[in-house]
Amino acid sequence: MTIAEISESIINEFACYDEWLDKYAYIIELGKECPVIDEKDKTESNLIKGCQSRVWLSCECKDGKLFFKADSDAVITKGIISLLIRALDGQTPKDITDADLHFIDEIGLKEHLSPTRSNGLTSMVKQMKMYALAYSMK
Image (cartoon, rainbow, N blue to C red; front, side, top):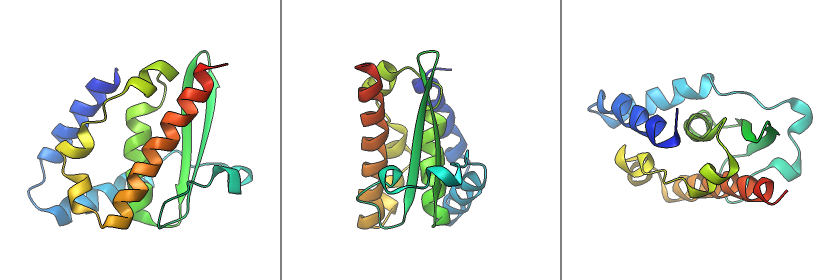
């Protein structure tokens, strides 16, 4: 699936929930399914700067596509990074750097997060795109 198709799928899933408490519960559930980073990769260099919580993100390139794993010490943050991984995992560096992650606004995620969590979300997206940019130059 393309990033756009995955984004639409995420928007449709969130449309099922009327209340934001239900959406938060769903995000937390998604965090439980997040591809977990190896303990050896929980390093300072994999720690995303700008997040209120501790969030580790690793990236690996296989056959020209990027694959992400992450972990966080906060369940809501782990759910948020799992949404981003779902949208970007297995995509090419170019597709990731060019990606319009409109689903973030469409599902109302940014507007319902605290300012510090919203900054963290921006930092997560930025880090994933930085990985893509770095791999596109190799």
